[in-house]
Length: 405
Image 1 (tube, rainbow, N blue to C red):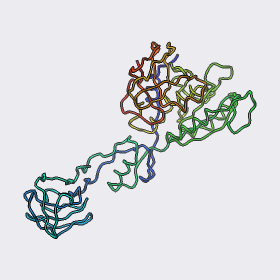
Image 2: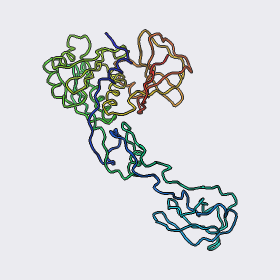
Image 3: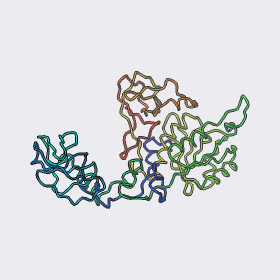
């Protein structure tokens, strides 16, 4: 019995555990997921300050000539009080003197020694930065489940934070199955094939921020499969491809079951990639993907990427969609829930002309894909479509309808 794509995703959301945390220096936390709210311990800015290099003035003095004999630099702790008919030169970021009502930029005044002629139109509070206008003390400035970016690190540094709690990296283990497949570093005969899935899975996991381990290849026997599974149980996710269909040597799921695995689904109503399975063995998530390269990687993007997001504890764990339009008419076979790979030029989506389940080359070309219901046989030029990106990370805090109708 097959589950639908939304059902499979819901099962993953509900049954994938979130990993524990570790404490890191903020400089080493890039790309990790925050495991605690960060609450401001002080205002940012911490004090009222100047937004420009200029002159601190009182607005009543606009259009007049005033005297300037003092200067305040960034980092100073001034005790000055600004009086009428006077100005104080001030640098960007410097604390405002008491009584300051605005800062006039240097280029807007006329200076003659200590005499400063001010412009006529000066707005009250112009070019002032108020304490707490960026971040208020006691407010949450980063939330649990946020992904740490360079800009997150700037916020943390601005509050004097040195270390934070983040989810530890997801550990992904991969082993190859199938006697007919050989590692890319072996010599093969004309009738033999290289295994492109395993290095692809490992590389993609690294791109998604995971730690990876290659267990090696195993034979199409229960004993060999069980041995490889045992070696991979220190990982958070075990990925396999092939051996999950109806062939005489498709023993992969049997080997997992023998060791106590529970499968939540074993087939998905999707083309390509129907024989995709998801389960858990002890504390390790299992994803069995189909053997055909294009089919396996499409399902990697839909399901494995979701497992990784959910494990990381990120708030935005759902697939994000880019609403775009078809570049031109395109015919599809219909009759099944279909994944259609294509390119995106920023304005429209163009399906790849050739994309068969056993191909490898379309994976590099595709920017994303759309999901089609079985009743769709024709996509028309300028028709609205929902594209799920592949080449960049785009996810959402809200669950969206991924299909194009």
